[in-house]
Structures are given as C-alpha cells and as structure tokens.
Length: 205
Image (tube, rainbow, N blue to C red):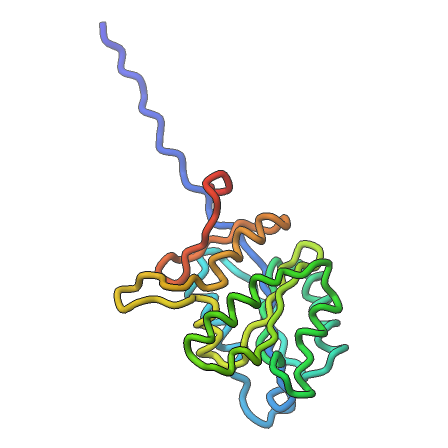
C-alpha cells in the first residue's frame, strides 16, 4: 500500500528588515531659504530607487556650522539610524566643515569610502581631487559624507556603468549593506539594477 505524504510548503522568504536612515543636507543658503534645497530630494529619491527595505527617513536641513553638524549626527545616531548620509560642505572653502564635524563624533574612520568617491568623480571632473568626503562609524551607525550635487550623489553611490548596464567602477553603496551588518545594523537589501550590494557568501541570507 502506497502512502502519500503531504508535501511541505516552500518556506516563505523573510520580509526585508525595516531600517531607519538619516539624510542631512548641509547648506547655509538653503537652510536660510535663499534657494530650494536639492540635497534632501536627491537622497530621498535615490534611496527609494535603490533599497528593497521599508525605510523610515529622518531628514535634516542645516547650515554649515561645525557644532550644528556634529550635534545633528549625534542626535540621528541616538535616534537609531543605521545609516546617515550627508550632502554638502566637503570642499576646500572656509565654510566647508562637514568632514571635520563628522570626524569629531566618530569612533573610527573608514577611509576607503572617500577614496572610492573621488575615484568615481574623477571620471567626470578633474576637481574631484578637491573633495574631502569621509565615512565613519559612530556606535552602530555608518555615516557617509556625499558630494553636494544631486548628479554626483547618484554617481558616487551607483558607480560607473557601460551602455549595457555592466558595472565598470563599483559605487560605494555596494559596500554599505555589509558594513552595516558588521557593525550590528539591519540587513539592507538593494535592487541590483541600481546598485548590487556585495556580501561574502557566508554573510548572505
């Protein structure tokens, strides 16, 4: 007599983890209302395109003031942001103090992010060598300074691709999810057509 055993259902894939992300636009004139801010919309739109995870955004528009920048990064870390992206204030002008304010609250620096951003931007403009973006870890939060222009934000996050969409130079976001894994944050999942996240096989879920 043959006995038919019930077929076990396929295990359901776990839903993507929710993540809290801080986005900070740093500009004296935009903060005063002299002109509309372009940084926050650019960051908001890119994250919506790139991430599969449900995200809660903490948005800040602040002036180029060292103490204000540092305190904002502290507040967003304390609010539980796994990732904070800043834009603006990374050039050589006297009011460009974002890197210094970021380093002031860091537990450790991750120089590779800034190096890669400048390498990507050099494919477009020779003045990329004037950029001073840094990335740091504060507690369990990854903080990255991005360029000030919306086009440059997308270029550095996504990297360079050829006409067929093949990656020529990886964008920095490819390393972000695994970095956040390592510091104890949520498991971020990105859309490969925007920027494929890289993880060692042992770290993939």
